[in-house]
Length: 283
Image (cartoon, helix red, strand yellow):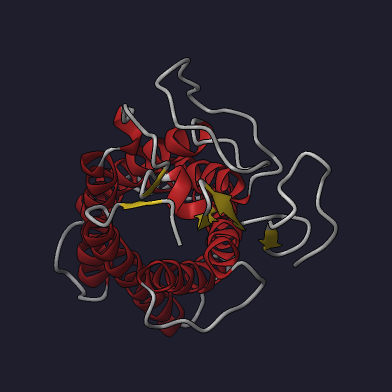
């Protein structure tokens, strides 16, 4: 995306991003070319050259812990989904408990990531000011920011999975009650995850689609997007009908749930690696 520049912006600035969002800005900073990427900026991976203080939500350790929480949650889901594929491996309530514990780690990571986006530098103009540790916004409201939209929908999705997995520990006997308390929250969570994953992929692509398999941020977003797609398929198949259903449906649903968690695990491990890669905002 490119277009006319706002009057207050430098004449040398060029913009990119999936319309109407801007996720990349190129401009002159102290006589040198500078590149400002939205994702790296909100995560503190790309810093202003005059940065003197680093808020806790922009420190490498903060990003590393987000990745660790996502990784632990993913491992719980992989374990529980695998056990679900083995008849008689563990009691249903125990498998449900593993799923629920994993969802708590997902929600923790989702909240921490949204907190980061809610307090990220303003990406609407450039050059950006150095980040200062001021007022802390727990949720924030940045509907014009692609990163914030991605993290808030992901966080909301993790909360839906909290309800979905908790109610599945001791599932109700009536099919319609099970659909309302287990399937519906899980389906809503899957839709929110898919929206979040798509927005995150557009944020790093600076377009609606890209193919950059050598870029670490692309690998992270793509792995998470695949995880969201597998979760979506699993969520659709998890619907509980009024009467009996073929046994293969539950097997395929749990298999896709496991594959989705593997995608999230890969993204989380890559995110932990990415946390150590900070840079200064220069070309």
